[in-house]
Structure formats: C-alpha cells, structure tokens
Amino acid sequence: MRSREYDLDFRDKAGRIRSWGIGLLAVATLQWAWCALLLLTPYEVDREPEDRHPAECESRLLTERGTANEGLQRNDWCQNERDWPEALAVLGLSVPVSVVGVALFTSGSLSIRMSAHAEAMRELDKFSDARAA
Image 1: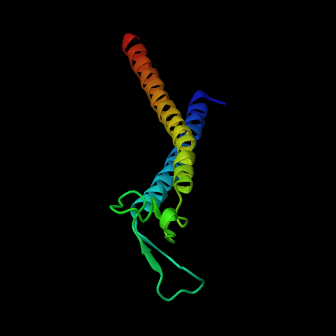
Image 2 (image 1 turned 120 degrees about the horizontal axis):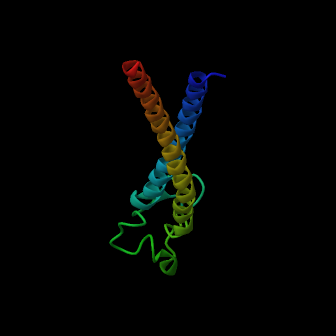
Image 3 (image 1 turned 180 degrees about the horizontal axis):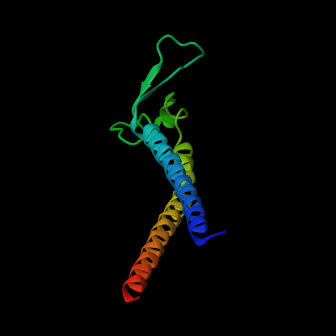
C-alpha cells in the first residue's frame, strides 16, 4: 500500500471516529434535554385511571409551594409522579456518554489534523528537494 492510500484510509478511519464522537455528544445532549424537561416543566397527574380532571403539578425545580417536593405529607398526587432519582439517573448516565463522545471527537479531529500536517510537510520537502536540484 502506498503512503498516500494509507494516509487516505487513516483519514477515513479518523473521520468515522470523529463521527461517533459527534453521535455520542448528540445522545448526551438529548439526555440533558430530557433531564431539563423532567425538572423544569409542569405536569398533570391522574388521580385514578382515565381521570377527566387531572391534578396540575408545578415543576420539580421551580416550585414556589411544596406541591412537588413536600406533597407526600399532604397526600398530594404530585409527589410520586416525577421523582428526583429518575431525573438524576438520566443526568448521571449522560456523564460517561459525554466523556466518551468528547474523547472520540478529539481523537478523530486530532488525527485528521496531524495527517494533514504530515502531508503538508511532505509537500514542502518535495518542493525543497526540487528547488535544490
């Protein structure tokens, strides 16, 4: 295999690695958005199956009253619908996905740039050799 073919194959593999990194970062972004949705949006809870007038609940994070956080003491239906562990689990799962995504994206980008730099150096060497001759 000639060096140019090898270099093109190397860049192709590095591009795929970088694409995987971008994909994992997109997944992590979706996980962050889901966590924000769970914590920041108000929601409704059915008191019984097919309830026509569901209870309206404030968001978990931006509540002024205790509907979302202290509802269990007052037999409020909002307490058990959106729990903190679910939101924190989504947030916790996004951390390793983000770390691996950043590592793959950085590795792929760096490999492509180093390959381009090596090619530029080879071209400069050819130009210098032709000029010296």
